[in-house]
Image (cartoon, rainbow, N blue to C red; front, side, top):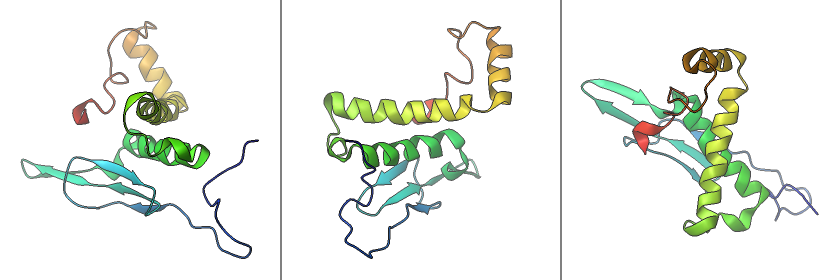
Amino acid sequence: DWKWNWDRNLGPGQAKSPLRIIAHAGEKANATYHRGKRALKFYYLTSEGKTAYLCRSFDIVAHETGHAILDALKPKLYSCHTGQQGALHEAFADLTACFGVLDQLDMCEDIIAETKGDLRKAGWLTAIGEQFA
């Protein structure tokens, strides 16, 4: 029996809590989902006088949102950070980002043009998030 588990322990009349977005959580090359704080935290980094805000990266935002969605759907998986459960969480978040990109027609056209239809070829889609791996 499936149900959305985000506010599973709420009593009658209690307000549901939204997912908080902390766009400038601090300086480091990271973004995280925090269950206890019900928050997505995006950091920034500065290099050679330029600042990169990770909250402005669609694929990073989608990836962290994927963690929150999977946690709401299957909360028991959240505490497993190693092995197959941890890998499932990362794969779900990665696919959330990929499907988000592929939902945009102009992005699909760019991918097809860049790879000439051979999606096994390396291109910008295969490099998503690579600088943070």
